[in-house]
Image (cartoon, rainbow, N blue to C red; front, top):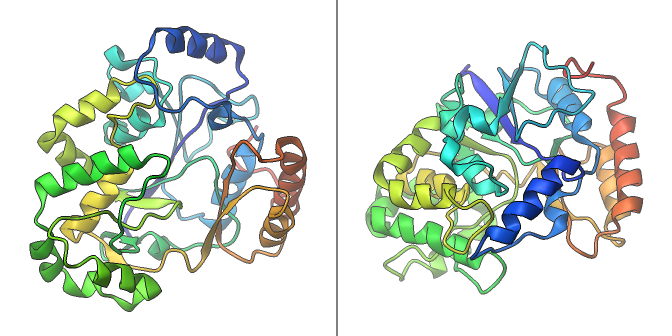
Length: 329
């Protein structure tokens, strides 16, 4: 079995010093995209992420836990599988501090000791049932759901446009689809095959179907993109806050898809991404408590009932993960 690491960036938006620095640099910044407070809210459920990893993915090699220097008071920094990583440990000093997830994620390959095979999590992705290494990697390649898509005028369209621009400047669509025909037209894509078929006439990539779930990556993919597109990668890294000129963590994913460096898998079959709302809260609690899926992503927006949802969701996590993990004091 390949050595597989997990990577999770995290920030405590309630931290007074962090909020002071955030406000100071925000006042000096231009061309800012999205600084809504919901991006930095602390749901106080990170311990359940670690408990889920230990219980449901005991095979993981290392967990690289990334922060700006913050440490939850309950975290055991001496846990055998924990690698505590500060931004300053791997992001060049001239780009710090940063308050954007994009530089934090696009420089992950620089983390000392990171495996060639790693899975990138957001702090709202939780394991709630047993997963095997083959959920993320098979035959030395990441598992992914490959389907073409069309960009639409929604939030973050500019970011995806930038990602696709880089892909189209680096690859020839028809050549790659022919070369990896059975990957792109695999039954694993299900009804999303129709999207690919409809978009075939366009000579350029018009977009890729994107999920919002943990994704397996090859470290060498990041290294290759930095080598070939250092200008846009460095420009994104230099943005302390999200900017309309950024690329994102999905660029390495698209790069892997374009090159055929993936194994077709319907990654949504055992996973679910739900927006937390009054209407969805009961369903979310049932999915967690009854292990109806293996992975759950909990999204939020300005309408999310934060306090009520926090109490109920954390109680559901406590029900299925009541015991401390080795990552806790």
